[in-house]
Image 1: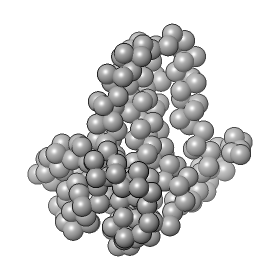
Image 2: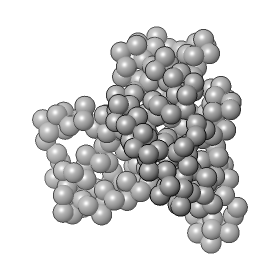
Image 3: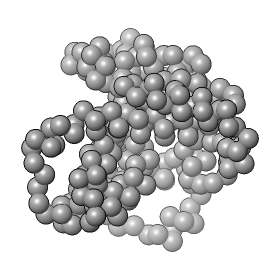
Image 4: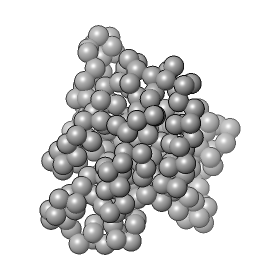
Amino acid sequence: MVSISFNIKEWFNTKPTVNNLLSDKLLIIPIAITVLYFYINPELPSITNTSLSLLPAIFTADLISGIYHIASDNYFGNLEPIRTLADGSRHHHKEPGAMIHTPIKENFKEAIFNNIPLYTFSILLSPFYKELSLFIITSCHIANLSQLSHKYSHIRSHHLKLPFGVKLLQDWHILLNPNIHKKHHTSYDENFAVLNGWSSFISNRLFISLKSNSLFWKRIGFDFTEAH
């Protein structure tokens, strides 16, 4: 059971680490956001609209994972908690197999933490554009699976046992295919998306664009000029 008690003063006075940033309390957020959305908009969405938006939501979720990955791989500023999470991301490049042993709930917590700004934006948007708000929330919910899909990719790369269904979804590119993700760990400048890689053609182009404007980004703590 997850405790919901939270001391704001204590949190701000605690030196950021990955462990205390990624609290178990984060697991409440997707449920709380969903409840809050339907409190603001009690009318249930149509099954047709929900079905039609599912594939675009999966694509958007993958793109979200790619954008966060680009940011965390290339941030060298001092702004917390971004600095702490970025250090953790680059440590993964040094020891990619370490995440194989990460508990599943930790995979969810990291993705949920990354999605807090979009969750917040979606709720602020919901009284005015409820369909768009629900789409963003759905995309974030799906994106919460990205680090788990990422881990499964590494598990298969290390030739460890995976359920047949997971390997099938990887082969169909519904989950992240390990052969696609291996390219990222070779060059560190492509294939940033970690849900399934559908949006890699966009995140790859985005990275090239950011790299070409590196002087501006260095001023706010990002360095896209080298592979990290």
